[in-house]
Image (cartoon, rainbow, N blue to C red; front, side, top):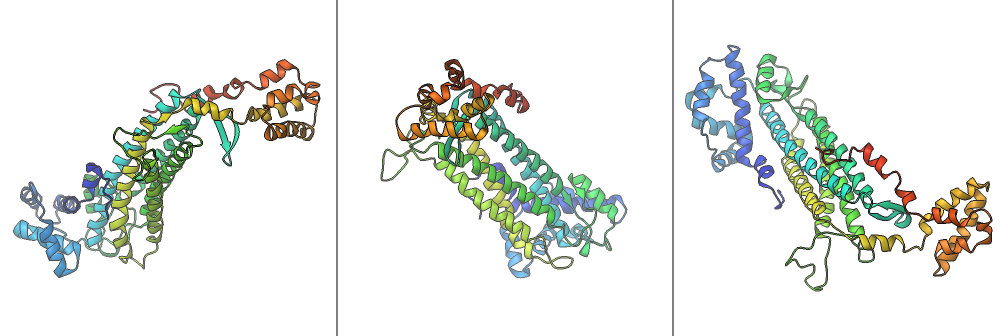
Length: 440
């Protein structure tokens, strides 16, 4: 199953026609290596290249052959020989099916990886731009969903900026680890095809030779790659969930852009729902499932079985296409995100100054009180704010127990938002987010 939200570049990688084209490139690379080493006649590569220069695969014909032979690579080779004539007998010489399947899959994943890494870079740029734009846009920080202390929306975006930098590093390493092929023949012993052929063929294809293989490339590489996709999807779900929470009617600090002509509900005309974020969050669950399937593929019987094969025909196209969509969708969401600064300020002040309680506690400790004494004093003042409509600053200014330790000026300084933003610049400097070139 390939989801319908597909950008053409990613979807094209996983078409049947492109798969067969990739397999043919693997076969021709091996032919060229064998001819160079004198294993087959030297004129064979040029003849086969000439015959396949404008090759158009008849997918329906290959599938028709497969219905009879019950083997996809044999069906491909049968079709290729029909089109190539006598020289086609040198195709697949000394090779086994997985030489083609696994090396071809590595090429497809390598191409898909490049698109995904480009997607992540675009999202990083969007997050960096949003972080800089709202570097000092005040809002309340929340722990357990409850108001904690002031932060800025720029810091919230910077957090995700840093997380997707790590996702990019993980994808780069995963792409490196999976960019290996094998042309080692049945059970990986090179009995019918020498290692020099593998080295030459894979160099031409832009892949590394697996130092050792059985009949297949070992599936820890594929599991690692899929795990990197799942972690990236998890970060996208985390970001989508944050936006969804901030878009709740009672909060309404940010909103997905609601386009002209868009409708939110078939029943309630007033609705504006975070549907794009919900799509992203839902697809993350799918990719986590695919990662689990890839982990299950590691333990195969002896030198090979094909329990991994049917799984991979689903998980690699679907996971890369889904993640490509999710990254593109989230970049659009962030670029067009509506930020309601007034609501952020209103919500920040909803608890009437209680977000400054730690500052009060620390000042009391500085004055000589034990932490327990100061904590009790601040908690008792905060209780009056919880129970009444007063604000904490007024309660503290009227408190004899507080004012015996703190002057009016000291109290005023405690209830200053600038105290909580004084190190924002330092954090942005750590992330190299001080300029527009930081995420390039």
